Image (cartoon, rainbow, N blue to C red; front, side, top):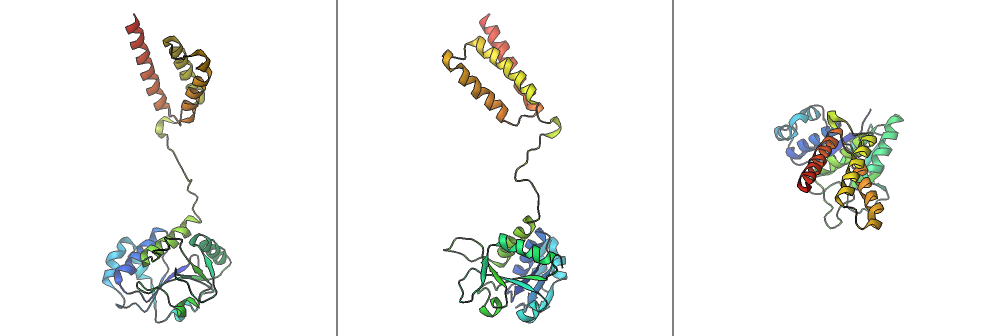
Length: 245
């Protein structure tokens, strides 16, 4: 077992099962178990909602009870936002999936319980869990639908093993401008600005130059950007010289 099973407990509408399947497959999850679906199985509405994730539904395993659906699992998490009288560890989705990955790597079989659309999980379901997953949401409206909850847990699962940089910038074919080339542009600009009397009063010249240099070195300029700035700066310089003559 290389991923957790998502266990939908007594889902009421096929559309919600399909939406959950679609949310799971968005993040590479395809192990679905369904406990006593109200409208029977298979379900055409679930297939229609699942779109390109119908294989998740095709491979879903149907059980009569939560007990049966969790019988072979060694670690079970229950998703719920409501306070309970049961003593359970409460984890965020982020913390839970890290624990899941460690457990699965150690050979354990893991499942996540998702409750009914209207009433969520009952105590009889939650008591079978090892821990509770609660999503930090607006306390005045903590209810999440089946697909939303599946999506949030699935996203955290995927993110925990994803190494996508937090920010990227593609300079395209032109590539980024070399700092030396930026300095050459700034030397030209400084000369032209001196000639036009821009640096005034004189005692402000050093700080104004610092601001100018910081501006151009702070920006991630591409070689194409630099050529454009060179062209516009030279055009303005020629225009100024012509006007002066």
